[in-house]
Image (cartoon, rainbow over all chains, first blue to last red; front, side, top):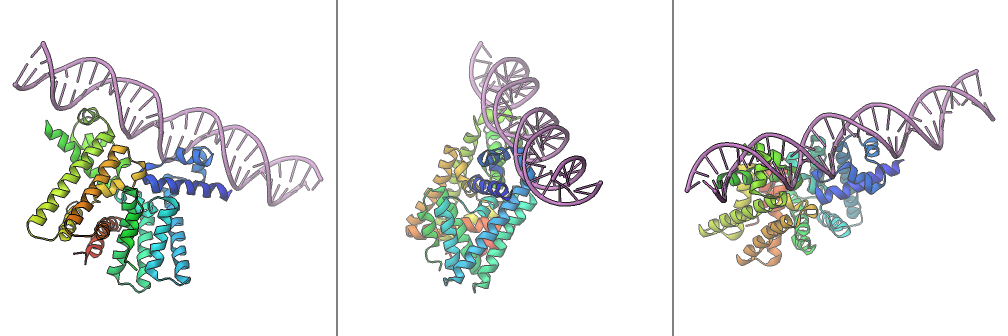
Amino acid sequence: MKDTADAIMDAAERRIRDAGYNGFSFREIAEEVGVKSASVHYHFATKEDLAASVARRYTERFLLSVDEEVASGCGTVEAWVRGFRRALNDDGKMCLCGALGAASHSLPKEVLSEAQQFFRLGLAKLTEGGLSQSRALQVMAALEGGMLLANVLANPDAFHAAAAGLS
Amino acid sequence: MKDTADAIMDAAERRIRDAGYNGFSFREIAEEVGVKSASVHYHFATKEDLAASVARRYTERFLLSVDEEVASGCGTVEAWVRGFRRALNDDGKMCLCGALGAASHSLPKEVLSEAQQFFRLGLAKLTEGGLSQSRALQVMAALEGGMLLANVLANPDAFHAAAAGLS
DNA sequence: CCTCACCTATCAACCGATAGATAGGCCTTG
DNA sequence: CAAGGCCTATCTATCGGTTGATAGGTGAGG
């Protein structure tokens, strides 16, 4: 079933956002989903595969939700702020690609590639929205850094302060 | 000797900045230093101990170098920018406490506590330098986020752009 | 002689990954 | 329609390797 594969990705996403690529295991995810670890391998051949798939899905969803915010009338920067804020408030976790990227020098190449894609596409969308390359980097850094601070300090207000005045 | 303990912390710091708390092992560090893993345990009882010690030393050094920059006449914000820039240019790695903090929800409590201390003391120093609480968070987020972007994208210019215009 | 700094050897637990069996559904063909 | 074969999704069992940690031994130097 597609159901199980989705449930595996859901569990993996949660764990990666909490603990990074090196912080989750097949057995852990399997238990959360209610299957055996061999069944996780059936859907995703390797750990690299699984993490890369999760990152790709995350990027697609994130960009889509930003597009929707923009379509419903809010500015590009504000759309990004809302995307990150929701990720923080709903789940109380890091941005998935931030959590992966913080250990970028130890990532398998497919996973690194997907994490990079998140930021490349994100920055491209910001520049399409009228920002300069440099300004786009400033916005992305502020959001990702704000997310990190909010997580470390266990205080969402850190993100709100960091994002204030961006848009 | 204090020599070996320092060498262990040096190696651990490098690995943590590349791969996070879950991405290094006693044997790896031992090999790099040229001793056996049991000897690492002699100097640092547990992994939690070692990582917490490394984080504490990192924070002390970082704050000290910022103080020196300020004493030599540059502004508080500029001093922080230089601190992060040096960490990035010299080593090509993440901020240690950023690398730890990105997986904050999976950190042993002593390690989390030391990572938090880095940010708490850093923010305090920024506000002592005349910044508002909110502005201090914006600066710290921009620097930490810029660091993350530069690492993921393997492009130091991402940091420079993110930090531009802060001071 | 005793403490420090290291060693060897080993432990149970966990890791990612694979092999092989099984049960159920669907498709094809006589 | 029935029977045989294949595909899917799961399981059990196991592999070699790594992990953090511990026990206990060894040699040097004060």
